[in-house]
Structures are given as structure tokens and as C-alpha cells.
Image 1: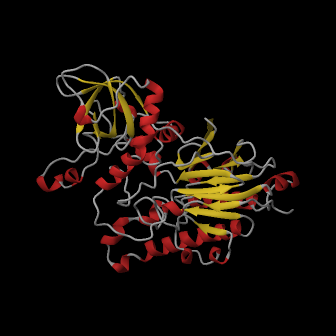
Image 2: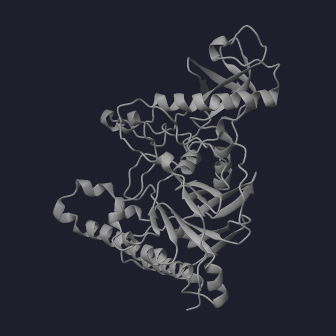
Image 3: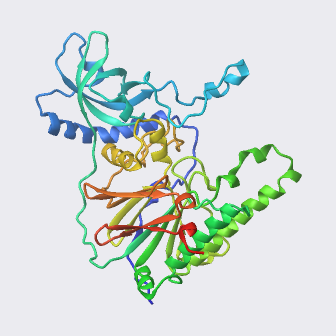
Length: 436
């Protein structure tokens, strides 16, 4: 059976780093973020609150007047629980380090708004648990006699208006996969994971299932693998402290892991276009945006023009559907620094903020841009995905399908999205559910 084809365009040039320069301060990144989003928020705030509420800079506020005004700036969240390099060196002073925790929020957290000139503490009708550092917003309220801004309401930039594009009425699917976590170990757990991975591979290339199933699989026109394809075991920093003669097993495990991954990638690439994104555990640069993995690591897949190492974040146009997403670091970091726990809710908030990763560069590593912020969302996506999440979920929100891709190594699940109508399917390859 012949596989369907689809129009495709890679739109990730914005995330490619052409010249690496690390001498700049991160303040430039916040400055260009506020500079670009300020005009949008000025319009949004006037639409929401009307022209009678004046727009002021922080320096223009009057603490002796309770007349409300609108201010625009970047939120800074002061968190006592947030990791700090100063705390990391506390062992040198015989101090107890903070215990590890899943969230870095507490009741003592405070919100501060900064513009180009100064900053002010925020109080009033504002939920500090829902904000994170780096969010640009407009606030309505007044400055009290103590110098704090008492918030009565707030608004965000929101998503850009949708572009009108003709969509195909023929069902064509994009498969979303994440968290393969392939390692070089020979444990029973790894064997089970590789068996599920092989089943998934065989299904997508049409070598598994009934004729009806194989006919449906021919509608899969692209596979997007959203990060963490290799296990964390292959990136164990403790090996740097060991003698070379002790590293043989670790090095062999890493080589075996890449070889195992390459085996499955070459099978997939022989039948369908595959986009491979780097993740936190993969051999790529740590700072966002992560650059494509080197093709030379994949000696078999490298020979196929259907194998595409891409950036993280990644944006593309498939059958006129704008697809945008990450390998999950941005959503996981917001989870740690806010009260939100549901990945789809966090994803929707990033769309409301019009920013993929507002916590860059505060708690999430980022390249120190000086002239632009590549993480600002400048076009409304039709599909917005996030990899390496605990569960697989999808939800259509304001015309955008939010896709939370589960870790395959834990759930044995992938997600198929129909580009014609944005309907989705979750397929499971759990070998324990099969009859032996």
C-alpha cells in the first residue's frame, strides 16, 4: 500500500543559533521581550478596560492618589525555595542544603513588576501561584502609601489572530512520540521497552496489524519525536570523576543506546518522514533553543533524506497546519515554579502569555539573545505539543489543539493527530497487556 504524502515546510530557522556569543548579559533578553510585547498589551488593556483608565510608566505612579492606572512590565517572582548557586556552595560553610522538592513555591513568595526604569511590589487581586518569572502582562490598580501596587485586574497578550489557510479534507496523520529513553542496558525492563518500541515501529511502517490497520497507517505522513530519545543513564556526569579504565561499561552502554535508537530510526525513516528533536537527556546543547542532533551519530538513518534532526523548540507547516512544540523543558519548569500541575493548563497559559518559555533565562537555561526573543509566539499554532509528560492528553482550545505527549518508556503510548479535523487517537503498545 502506498503511503500518502503531505506538503511540508520547516519554520524553525528562528531557533537556529548561527553565531555563538556568551559575553552578553541576560538583561537584554528581558528588555527585547518587553519591547515587543508592550505595544500588544497596550492595545489589549485598552480593549479590556477602556480609554478612561490611563496607561502609565512605573515612575509616573502617584502613591498619594488611589486613582487607578494601567502599568505594563515583566513579572519577577521572588521565591525562597528556588534553587540558587549561593545555596549550592553552602556546604563550604557547613550549612545544610535545601532538600530536593518537586515544586519551588511557598506562601512567602512575592510578585514584583519591572519595567525599563524601576520595579514595584504587587498585592491585591493577583494569584501569585499562577505566575512565573518572565511573564509580561498589563495590570490595573493603584499605588498605595507603602509603595505597593494594589492590583484589581490583569491581562495578557494572548495569541495572535489566526491565519486563514486552506486545509486538506483528506485524513492525514502526524504521529507524536516522546521519551523513548533508550539505554544500552540489558535489563528486563529495557527489553520490554524495546519490544514495545519495535511494535510501534512495525505498526507505523505498515508491517503490523490487519489490512485495515495497515491502510490507516498509510495516512501517517510524518513522525515527530519530541526529545529524550536516550536514557538519563547515558548522560551520567559522575563518569567524569572516574578513571578511564573504569569507563568501559559506561561508554559501551552509551554506544549501544545510540545504536539501538538508530536501528529503530532507520526503520521508521524507510517508510515515513521522521523529525528528531533533542531533549534534556540527549547529547545536545543544554541551553534553549537546543540545536539539531548531529547526523553523524546515526550511521544508518543518516543515509535517508526522510530523517530530519531538528531544533527544540520546533515549528513546521504540514498540510498548511502550523505545528509548534517543545520537548517539555519549558512546561516542566513552569510546573516547578507555579501551582499548576496539569500540563494542558500550563500549555494554555503559555499561549495566553504569548511566550513558549517565560522562565528563560531565570530557572531554565537559555542562550543570551540581545536583539530578539525567539520564544515569543508570533503566529497562532493549529497544533501545540509538549513532550515528556506523565500522561497523554489532548484538548482543543480556541482553535488550537494542545497535545501532551506521554513518555513512551513509561506509558508505551503515542498520539496520532488528524490534520484534516484535528481529531486525535492515543495508541498503546504495552506488551504486558498482550496474551502470552
